[in-house]
Length: 160
Image 1: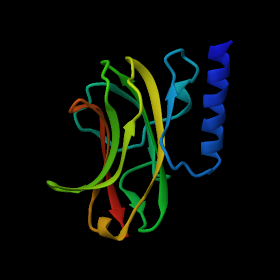
Image 2: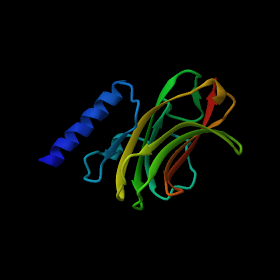
Image 3: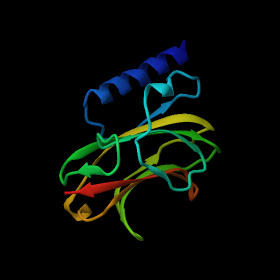
Image 4: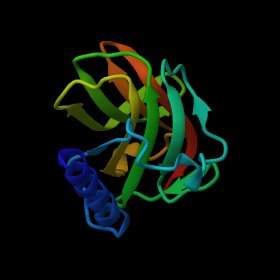
């Protein structure tokens, strides 16, 4: 019964998030029990895996279906990253950077408040693009664990 209640709560949060309710802290969904059909969604066309230890299952962000994504300063964008985590680590963090060549500026950083066992998780969160992000031409989403990129996604963008 506990598992059913937790699944209901997580799905309720997901539905609210999909309906445009602002997410001020990341939502983390545990799909290790197979409660979500990943085939309902597709990967963003044109993203690049930049060295993931885990398997990237789904990438959705910035209301963009194909790169380059067009982002506007001052707008808030919803990001979703589904990943099959390969290892078990105590300290995870989600980081979003804008990049141009070797230069990177952090947009968002969240520490995951608990350890994650190997399995399928979805991370859903919002970020605001600010004026200092103009001129950068890539967005990088990372799920970091003990200096290992469990997931690393790079997508071409234009920021206006």
